[in-house]
Figure: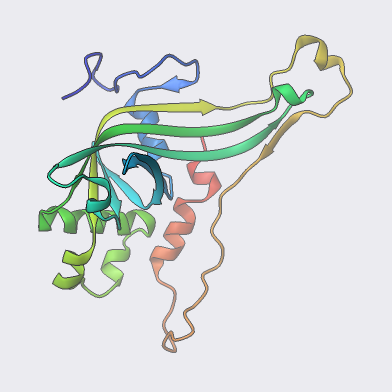
Length: 226
């Protein structure tokens, strides 16, 4: 069920912020260019946050490689979780230490996490995760065996609320500080992927697949920054 203040094209607002956005047109692109999600939950009355590979499929986030028993209590079908994705785009250097900041894009998602037990949904999720990180990689590798499919943990989070926060632009100094002879501006933080490193046991004549170049392009700074 959507939140009470749900409106088409938006998620429910958790709290007011001048940097917050709740529309899907802002939330989804930030989720769709991240490499890792930090998933928060409570285990044995203690907070836990674990980095995990993920992919968004419509209104659902699929998380790869997790053991449901660790997060979902025995006898329960779901568990509340908080999932975050963050991109650091630059260090904002001001004329005073007080006004230093960071340019960033982040999304915080709240929802109920469930263990994916349906084999077809699990297969669909694993294909989606693989091809998200390495476009079309699933078709480049050998088929997954039934044993591998059953032994791989996949969790799903159906998005209930989501909030994006964004900070862009130069530093914001005090009016009188603009007259000071102190450098100010932004030191960009970029993301890139290096040259592929071959497995020492790679057979002679095997060339790098197209998925590697596609991933380099997909996750480069020029393609995923606003």
